[in-house]
Structures are given as structure tokens and as C-alpha cells.
Image (tube, rainbow over all chains, first blue to last red; front, side, top):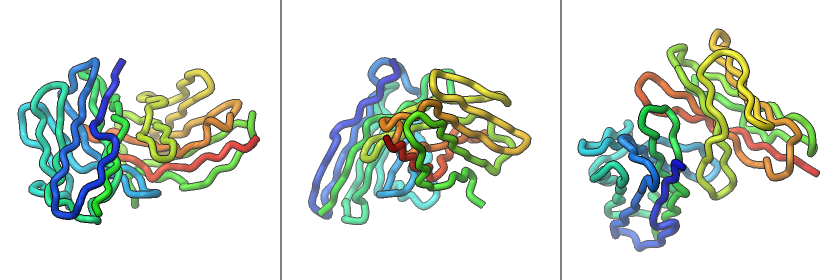
Length: 115
Length: 110
């Protein structure tokens, strides 16, 4: 149980385009989902916390207008990187919390490369 | 001071040995503690969590927590080459978000 999927697993796009990444909890309802970014050889950096039906809470330094998060249902959250630039190239990972616990389960990640 | 600190390693141990991974945290109010394993190019996978002082064992893994010393560790017995990965310590704060350490890279050599 507690499987989280992400789509796409890998995306290459041109600078200036927007990219949408989906995160789904497959076999449980996730009231809270988290979006992380990880640059090579660095640890995970939390970008935002997403609660179903409400606005996401962004970490300091993360531009909410650039990284649009929508948590439309208890099983789906999306991250849209708008007007992507090469410096946005990174490994984006979502996670979901099992209701009633602190345990976070991670999706497989999406590797974004912006040319 | 970083909120969660780990030695980046690499920690090299021979196959069959015990690998000991350490983590310290700065917030005394932290309530729950997690160990994740991350293989290169993959996302983290949860190995263990611990809430109370003392030891918690699960198969070859033992998590140890000492809240007075603000210290949590992970022991891996009978280490295997397949255990070679980066191990991330994560701490849950009252704000309901996980704070990750930078990870310790473990290398188990045959």
C-alpha cells in the first residue's frame, strides 16, 4: 500500500515553456502532499505544502507565481513550472502523507531538463 | 547551525559488517524521526521511523533515538552491496513538515 505515482518521469522542454507534473496517491487518500526539488548531490528541498481544496503554502524563496500548485482532489496534486528556464532543471519529487500518520511516501520523481 | 545534520561520507564498510549512520537535530520540539534510503537517480524510500527514546528494530535495521542528546542513528547489520545508497535522516517539526539532512553516502564493498 501507500503508493505514489508521478507523471511524467522525465521531461525535456525549451526555455520559456510551461511544464505540468502530476502526483497521485494510488491506494490512499492524501490530505497533504508535498513538493520537493533536488539538485545533483544535494538534499531534498521542500518547495511547498499542498492541502486538498486550499492554497498551497510555499517555502521561503520559492516563487508561487512560477511554481503553480493545484491540489484538486484527495489523490491528485499538480505542479506547473511556468516559463521554465535552464536553472529550473532539477529532480522534482512529490510525497503524500498517509492520513492520521506522519509517514510521507514519495513518488518516483520527475527529472526536468530545460534547454 | 543546520536543523538536521549528517556526515556526508562516504562511509565505507565491508560486506557483512555493521554500518552506523548518525544524525543530529537542533529543535528539541521535534517529535518524529525518519530514515530514508535514496539510490542514485531515484526518489527516497522510507526505511524506518521512530518516535520514542530507545531502539527500534526491523529486520537488519535498527533505529536509535536519544532525545536528550538530540541524536538519532541507523544501524544496518550484515551490510550488503545493495545497501550502498545515500541515507537521509528526516525530522518532523511541529509545523508538520519534514526537514531533511543532506544525507550520508554509504558504500558497502564485497
